[in-house]
Image (spheres, rainbow, N blue to C red):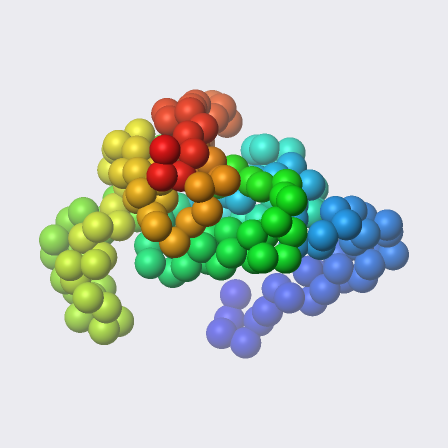
Amino acid sequence: MNAHTTNIAALLKRNQAFATTEDRRHVMPHSFIPRQRSFVITCLDPRVDPAAFLGLRLGDAIVVRALGGRVTAATLRDVAYFSYLVETKAPEGPYFEVTVIHHTDCGSSLLADETFRHRFAERAGYDEQELAELPVVDPAETVRTDVERLLSAPQLSPRITVSGHVYDVETGLVTTIVGPSPVGG
């Protein structure tokens, strides 16, 4: 593929087909509350698509995809905003569960290599210490860390719950590591 070739034309054609269906109207009365009451945080790896492995449809969940599926300051801000939105615009709820899903064979594990991390930080201008917190080498351990980060976040409503899981890219199965717990509980 040369530098000027694009794949967006095929995607736009799929969008035109989608726009002719009623699927685009598959939402709750409060359009910002997902039908499955789920806020999924997972990796940006293309093998890790929660619509596919969780069977989600449009309007079922809020999905945040980030490097390694890690809960960073930006991810925490997104969850805090949604938490505040529900508290102020739909105080009767329904409230939601934040589901953190890390996965096996995660490419973010390359950031555990000091040389690789240093060169990336130098090239891209990122803080090397912040990058050192991102690798998912042991997904069960990192998902526990991120669930705890959310459970202890004062910015989040105590009316939401948080759980943590690991998706195995080989088997396609999701394993629960941390069951649903209330924020601040």
